[in-house]
Length: 176
Image 1 (spheres, rainbow, N blue to C red):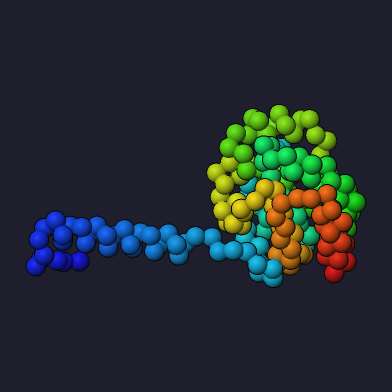
Image 2 (cartoon, helix red, strand yellow):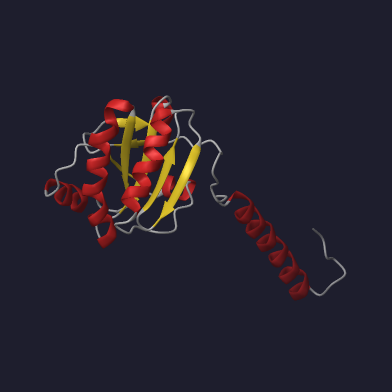
């Protein structure tokens, strides 16, 4: 860009503003788009609490509930035992829960997990890359994915009454 006929300070300011506009535009374009029902679930790989890397794409053919949570989130703590019950009820029908922890420090998370009796995998999203990919804005948030890898249900927050809704949705999907 050339502004050779303008005074140097004005020319420099316009070049700076043009550069900032291009950076801002690129940032807006690359921001995570909101997820919607029916779209393919974005694939990812994260390390689990058993030090195994788990890739969502390798679980195609199963009904998956991604549950984004944090140790500082009270409703998350209430929801996890309920998810354990759902997992145990439907796992033989091809249902899996992947609890995606968004805490920065895994030490706190591992200490917290030792006080719970959950058998489903916990994945660590310390860099929040998957949370951004899924455009997570509330804790907890759950995304239920069908056997074809498509997002079928999205839930933000948690209330005890959600458990019956989760169960009905999971039942419907494992029967498809």
